[in-house]
Length: 554
Image 1 (cartoon, one colour):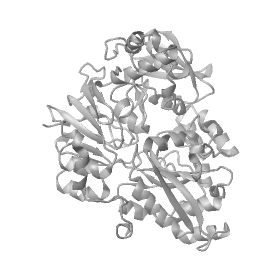
Image 2: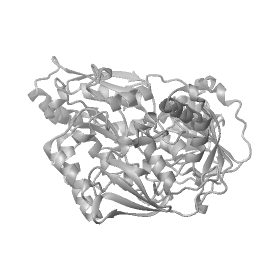
Image 3: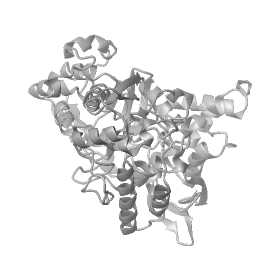
Image 4: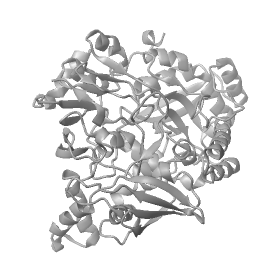
């Protein structure tokens, strides 16, 4: 077993991490206060478009804001689907498949009491698309345009109706715009008006207004912002007037605390300084359970991979090498090492998904077949293949990146791979991911380990397999594309019925597995350890979770 052969790089007793939690000592629990320790090293951006990957959406996007279309986080028995948000209904224009019509929910108010109407939606689209708009926010583009790459504009039809336009027919737009969180234009305008003209041109003043807005965020979500202290805490207050009565929060406050190190999070939970932690340390699970805390986990649309570089000179351009790496990894042993808290990945989607298709190449543990492929490719014990993978110490959905990569390093060694692990801070890694394998920041890097949400066919496949997704537009870091994946991705975008979508997505997935642009390692199950005083937790089959449903007994 791995536990006996591979120690954690920074393994230490859980109690030793308590000293790192001095910042929490001032957080005294008040009536109905839920305290959560995140894996992030800093509070995700609060200005409407979070950073920190999807951990940002989870903790500062969904609680503070609404989107036109949202994810159903109310159950965990099946994968989350789309549900109405600020839009009650939507459809593609039958006369023009590059135009979607959205009907807005009546009577919704922002936290400042102003109306959520068509003007507000157009304003929010302009903040990431219209370079001439005062509210244009280049700093938010990385968290929006790569997630909705075909969106080109918004048009007001009337107060309750807007049209969104796309650069091409795109059946995936409703999925994409779950990432566009709607902020109050009025609140921002007041801050912009308060910036002195001497501060610079429109762009400079707009940037200052957004900085101020992040400290005084105004959305329409189930929680309001009370206080933000960067790198320390974000306090959210209940919004008793939230439009969705089923999602009026059950707790008065939520305190979010960044604690990127797993042992520190675990220590905070065991010492009752927090009520909830993301990704507990695997070797502390038994201790956590023994003290009465609950472990929640569920299958997530998530892939924890190595993403290969296809740049000239990359060893991964040889498909025999890509297949060998996938055949050399003992995922079952890795799962055991993680206390069972992972699902073995045999693709982006597994056989029970309608988007799995029928791949020819089977991803499994077969080291003999792997060594044969490596021998054919010219490698051996005396001539190993040297590869470098970039990863982070923690971050959004990164699971347990250091021990997991150390296990992969050890496992692949038996198949003539000599793996170097380059560790960097999460935000730096995430930025490099967006810049791509051609960027100077990727010099000497052959693969990158960034976990990815795969909620839908765009997020799971198209953004990793088409030229339109090459950096800096989206996250095809390794510049992987084939004529077949391009053709099949187009078919997915043109699939406007569920039957067409399942067929097209399945064919694209089969092509991806056969070409193996990833080292397919694991799917996350999102383990989180929670105090027995907390109830009402719904762990969806989703990257996200609805904090409004949670109660706490003080």
